[in-house]
Image (cartoon, rainbow, N blue to C red; front, side, top):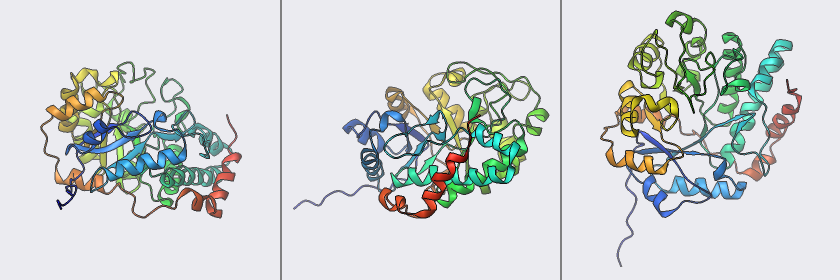
Length: 352
């Protein structure tokens, strides 16, 4: 009798891809086994119900001997991919900022509980991590950030982010601060436009980038640069800029966590060229992993053309993002008084 072939142990690669629907297709299973793939990002289209989501994440983790990292944009407010079948409706972060102005201690407490609920529910369904928190400052002008930002004061953003990250950690989830060094000052949406921020480096470091310096990789094990051009610092968007990623983030701020690119299919990334040019620009700038979302054709093109040896330090950073302990399943989670109390506290966050 022929022996069943075992899956090779592949370290996480530098490319994050997505999947189309509720289950994996044969083509997607093949794509996930590509040695350059290191993670999968999920969207609302991947959610029918909790049982289906849990089975999908099980299939994705099973695709490789070393499980792929599964992430989602699940912040609360309008950016919350899973909303039905028991998932708690989480507030936009601006509501926590407004609460801070009235009652800072309670805002900190509720931010921690929001982070815990967010992470506990995702992990109960097999999702490893969320791209949260948003550290952009609320200048009241950004089309894409809006009420996703905590506050206009970088000190308040730092404190509430730290509290939210603590809640994530209580459920075993890592955090990702975005969008370095700051997306809140510009009105343009980098999904559809190429935003340009005219400020000086000193202005940006003093205000928008301050939370990254204060929190560091001990609190934020990963960050995501903005598809924004800061011409007084570099002609390239931050995620394609060695100046921003290597000189400023890594060296000046001493950051040693994972750097994810933002989605390479966004309009803000188009300045770098085709999908291969974009990936190479981000990886050469110092990103550890690049995202290719909503375009499986471009993902396959990139995987067939990219020639890149993933540095051992990048592999080690990515591995540190995986949950460090097993999560309870959904039914067990529902029976936990810690979780139920955290859920009830969300109703105290009054919409602004």
